[in-house]
Each structure stands twice: as C-alpha cells, then as structure tokens.
Length: 143
Figure (spheres, rainbow, N blue to C red):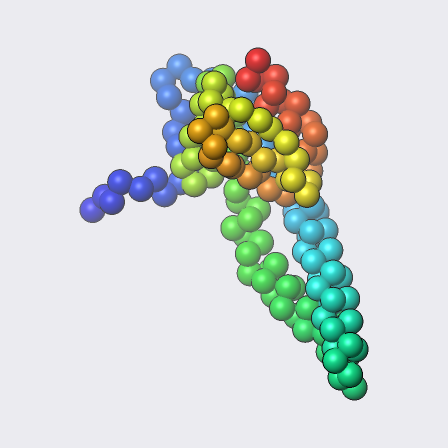
C-alpha cells in the first residue's frame, strides 16, 4: 500500500548527472553535541546556584546524561542524512527535491548550510565538515 510519501532519497532523473555528495561528518556531529553539553551544563549549574541548591554539580551531570544520551540516540539518523547535488537539482535524504533554479539564497547558520528557495522553503544541510566549500559549490551550481 502506498501513501504517496517518499521514504528515502529521490532518484536521479533520466540523463541527470550527479555532481557532488554532501555527507555529515562524525567529528563535527560529536563536537556539536559536546558544545551543547558544556552550554547546558553551565546554564543548569548556574541556575541551581542562583536558586541556592546545595548540589549545583547535578546540573552539569544532568546535561551530560541528557544531551549525551540524545546525541547517541540520534547519531545514526543525523549521520545518514546525505544530500546530493546534480546538474539540475539538490536532492535531500528524505525525498526533498530543490531545483537549482529555485534556490534564492545559501548561507551558514551555526556552521550548517541553509538553502532558501524563492518560494520561502528552507532546507538545512547539517554537520558538514566544510560548510563554506559546500556553499561555494551550491552557488557555482546555481550560476
């Protein structure tokens, strides 16, 4: 039974040429998880101190456990999100299809690449090892 939803990456069209593949980087992913652990740990500890809690160390421990478990649980999904650039389109991991002619802007957001279409749709390419190189490649492909 088909519900009409695309469950994986869109296939290449006939005669379409693959130009580049943008895959997430495990080191970049782990670095982002560690940054979140440090930020939320410091925030939680500071809040507990401000509230007069005698055990402010529990904030950073909770951040380590909470964000760490979340990062471990989501790693396989996040690291499988590969985007493909063809001579006509940008193809996402969940069936997203962005014609190159519809791309309005490409920019970085916290180290990730944000693609904005003329219709206002936004697509985020996350955990890339070299976001500026990806942006340059996408801008070159649109031209």
